[in-house]
Image (cartoon, rainbow, N blue to C red; front, side, top):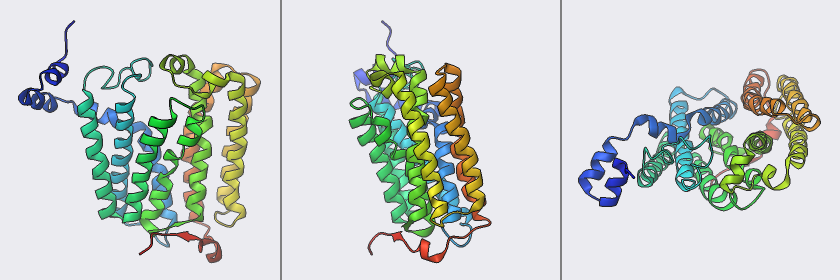
Amino acid sequence: MRTTLVEEAALNENPQDLLRVYSRVSWKDLLALTKPRIIALLLLTTLVPMFLAGPAAPSGWLILWVMVGGFLAAGGANALNQYLDRDIDHVMVRTRLRPLPSKRMQPRQVLVFSLLICGASFVVLWLGANLLTALLSTAGIFYYVVIYTRLLKRSSTQNIVIGGAAGAIPPLVGWAAVANEISLLPLFMFLIVFYWTPPHFWALALMRQKEYRAAGVPMLPVVAGDKETHRQIVLYSVLLLIICTMPVFLGLLGPVYLVLSLALNGVFLWQAIAILRQPVNGNIWRLYKFSLLYLALLFLAMGVDGLFYSAPKAVADFILRLPL
């Protein structure tokens, strides 16, 4: 069997060969490791809170450094996820063309790249924003890589539920970058993403459950079956609607957000119920695709609402900050 240049260099451990291999790594493969399409949505949930966290819009430089740091943090976490999942990614159709399972890169390269950009993200966010922002971002990396990927993904049907907290941290990062503290509204943003994550990923898992079963990943449809997954999607859609409306009744967000949120959550819940009533692939795929648009539009609705509404001072007084 022929071996690739990457494999030969790793086996021979010749420094010159290794240097030549590293220099030939495609930038497209490095970019693919970061999963840029997924990061785009994470950065949006980081950006909107930045405009709501202070009395004025953040500076362009602050936005730039937070976006760069956020991209590096999320990209590093995604790359580390692929490093840890390199033994099963070749099993699944949607992951087998990634740089590691397709043998375009070797594990050592991916690990070094991941750690470098994770470290760079901490420095960028600390120097470009503040220490709290850098610590929150690093906590998200740790949670995604260790708690979700390493401990939960292959051991529990609640992997997405508990592990979803990692993807919910970007709103906290964006808020902290401007305010250098965490108040009640960003905590609700965290909860919104947290409760959005299970129905979003369970819809994907329903479509890909044969692959998850072959890879030994106990996603809810694989273990509990389709019907229970359909019920859980509806349940979490209801909980999501409740969580989304609570900031309005607490005075944190205004009527513009309320109207748009009710409309978006109404469509989300209607599509979830459609899966329960008629669990065909078309309905499942429709919810999955809409859930991506839903989260983007919901956060944009918060931003638009902020142009017309300001929370009372008494509500905004709840804060969490690093001790000096």
